[in-house]
Length: 117
Image (cartoon, rainbow, N blue to C red; front, side, top):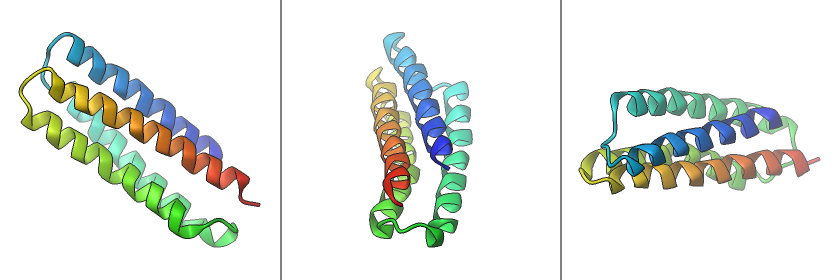
Protein backbone atom coordinates (compact mmCIF):
# COMPACT_ATOMS: atom_id res chain seq x y z
CA UNK A 1 0.00 0.00 0.00
CA UNK A 2 2.78 2.42 0.87
CA UNK A 3 4.58 1.66 -2.37
CA UNK A 4 1.37 2.40 -4.30
CA UNK A 5 1.19 5.90 -2.81
CA UNK A 6 4.84 6.62 -3.58
CA UNK A 7 4.50 5.31 -7.15
CA UNK A 8 1.51 7.60 -7.62
CA UNK A 9 3.65 10.49 -6.35
CA UNK A 10 6.41 9.63 -8.83
CA UNK A 11 3.92 9.52 -11.69
CA UNK A 12 2.56 12.91 -10.61
CA UNK A 13 6.09 14.36 -10.72
CA UNK A 14 6.55 12.92 -14.22
CA UNK A 15 3.26 14.47 -15.34
CA UNK A 16 4.31 17.78 -13.78
CA UNK A 17 7.49 17.62 -15.83
CA UNK A 18 5.51 16.87 -18.97
CA UNK A 19 3.21 19.83 -18.29
CA UNK A 20 6.20 22.06 -17.47
CA UNK A 21 7.73 21.07 -20.81
CA UNK A 22 4.51 22.19 -22.50
CA UNK A 23 4.67 25.46 -20.59
CA UNK A 24 8.32 25.98 -21.49
CA UNK A 25 7.55 25.41 -25.17
CA UNK A 26 4.53 27.75 -24.84
CA UNK A 27 2.12 24.99 -25.84
CA UNK A 28 -1.45 24.53 -24.74
CA UNK A 29 -2.72 21.30 -23.22
CA UNK A 30 -2.10 18.61 -25.83
CA UNK A 31 -4.02 15.41 -26.47
CA UNK A 32 -1.11 13.42 -25.03
CA UNK A 33 -1.12 15.42 -21.79
CA UNK A 34 -4.89 15.21 -21.58
CA UNK A 35 -4.85 11.43 -22.09
CA UNK A 36 -2.10 10.97 -19.51
CA UNK A 37 -4.05 13.04 -17.01
CA UNK A 38 -7.22 11.01 -17.60
CA UNK A 39 -5.37 7.72 -17.06
CA UNK A 40 -3.74 9.15 -13.93
CA UNK A 41 -7.12 10.33 -12.66
CA UNK A 42 -8.48 6.79 -12.97
CA UNK A 43 -5.46 5.53 -11.03
CA UNK A 44 -6.13 8.13 -8.32
CA UNK A 45 -9.72 6.93 -8.02
CA UNK A 46 -8.41 3.36 -7.64
CA UNK A 47 -6.00 4.62 -4.97
CA UNK A 48 -8.89 6.25 -3.11
CA UNK A 49 -10.91 3.03 -3.25
CA UNK A 50 -8.00 0.81 -2.15
CA UNK A 51 -6.99 2.96 0.80
CA UNK A 52 -10.59 3.58 1.89
CA UNK A 53 -11.30 -0.14 1.65
CA UNK A 54 -8.32 -1.06 3.82
CA UNK A 55 -8.96 1.72 6.31
CA UNK A 56 -10.77 -0.56 8.74
CA UNK A 57 -7.64 -2.61 9.38
CA UNK A 58 -5.40 0.34 10.38
CA UNK A 59 -5.60 2.70 13.35
CA UNK A 60 -5.08 5.82 11.25
CA UNK A 61 -6.96 9.11 11.48
CA UNK A 62 -9.62 8.37 8.89
CA UNK A 63 -10.75 11.96 8.36
CA UNK A 64 -7.27 13.22 7.51
CA UNK A 65 -6.45 10.29 5.24
CA UNK A 66 -9.73 10.44 3.33
CA UNK A 67 -9.36 14.22 3.01
CA UNK A 68 -5.94 13.83 1.42
CA UNK A 69 -7.24 11.13 -0.91
CA UNK A 70 -10.27 13.15 -2.02
CA UNK A 71 -8.16 16.24 -2.68
CA UNK A 72 -5.74 14.04 -4.66
CA UNK A 73 -8.67 13.10 -6.89
CA UNK A 74 -10.18 16.58 -7.22
CA UNK A 75 -7.03 18.71 -7.67
CA UNK A 76 -5.87 17.28 -11.05
CA UNK A 77 -9.34 17.82 -12.49
CA UNK A 78 -9.40 21.42 -11.29
CA UNK A 79 -5.89 22.09 -12.58
CA UNK A 80 -6.69 20.52 -15.94
CA UNK A 81 -9.91 22.52 -16.33
CA UNK A 82 -8.00 25.69 -15.51
CA UNK A 83 -5.25 24.69 -17.94
CA UNK A 84 -7.76 24.03 -20.72
CA UNK A 85 -9.50 27.36 -20.19
CA UNK A 86 -6.28 29.40 -20.18
CA UNK A 87 -4.90 29.69 -23.69
CA UNK A 88 -1.52 31.11 -22.64
CA UNK A 89 1.55 29.15 -21.64
CA UNK A 90 0.54 29.47 -18.00
CA UNK A 91 -2.39 27.12 -18.48
CA UNK A 92 0.00 24.20 -18.62
CA UNK A 93 2.02 25.85 -15.85
CA UNK A 94 -1.03 25.56 -13.60
CA UNK A 95 -1.28 21.87 -14.49
CA UNK A 96 2.39 21.41 -13.58
CA UNK A 97 1.98 23.10 -10.20
CA UNK A 98 -1.20 21.14 -9.52
CA UNK A 99 0.55 17.86 -10.24
CA UNK A 100 3.41 18.79 -7.91
CA UNK A 101 0.84 19.43 -5.19
CA UNK A 102 -0.72 16.02 -5.87
CA UNK A 103 2.73 14.42 -5.60
CA UNK A 104 3.23 15.97 -2.16
CA UNK A 105 -0.20 14.80 -1.02
CA UNK A 106 0.43 11.24 -2.28
CA UNK A 107 3.68 11.16 -0.31
CA UNK A 108 1.79 12.38 2.74
CA UNK A 109 -0.81 9.62 2.29
CA UNK A 110 2.02 7.07 2.25
CA UNK A 111 3.51 8.60 5.39
CA UNK A 112 0.19 8.57 7.22
CA UNK A 113 -0.30 4.93 6.29
CA UNK A 114 3.25 3.99 7.22
CA UNK A 115 3.30 5.65 10.63
CA UNK A 116 -0.11 4.37 11.70
CA UNK A 117 0.56 1.19 13.57
